[in-house]
Amino acid sequence: MNIQLYAFDTPNGRKISVALEEMGLPYDVQVVDIGKGEQNAPEFLKISPNNKIPAIVDPLGPDGEPISVFESGATLIFLAEKSGKFLPRDARKRIATLEWLMFQMGDFGSIPGQVHHSLALENEVDRRYGLERYMAETRRLYGVVERRLQGREFFADELSIADFAILGCAWRPHRHQIDLADFPQMHRWYLAMMARPAVARGFAVPLRRPATN
Image 1 (cartoon, rainbow, N blue to C red):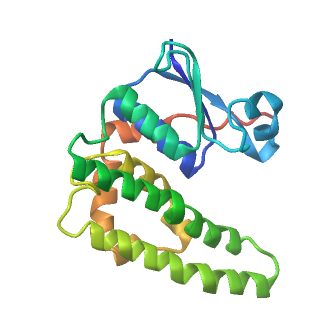
Image 2: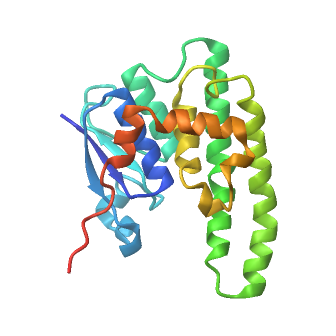
């Protein structure tokens, strides 16, 4: 019985499709079109009470009974524990994985997202204020990532769910007004991650419905 992934074509959705492909867990996709407000449907709220994607339903939970999981970080931890992959057993590496996962959840997802939001504002004063405020912090966060990857292949020294989480948000740096060439260690890591076959499959999973005439 396959895991049901409820997602849309966003960085948070891509974190989970990439992780599922890397972990080799069978799953089916249920597109939740957030542009059409489908995240507010009562049926989806039973799975994700915060009205957000991604979420999953695993028909074979830890006790053999169905379980739903919402919030991308919680979902990544759940899937790592289920598969036995990408959450290191070594205590120091495990702590590092969770630290960098929380870094992504708390800052590296939300702050660059504010840049993307600010760019779309029609009011020039609001747009300028938003960009000045959030661009500086976004570049600082990219600098944090750059320093962490100095001399490291992955965030916890071995491939982990922290890499999948951060990759989802670094997937479209142009939306953050970032040129990865300014961050060579991160650029190296990004290219290596995107070259992984399972990552490519995760990004190729259709998370939008085909357009209809």
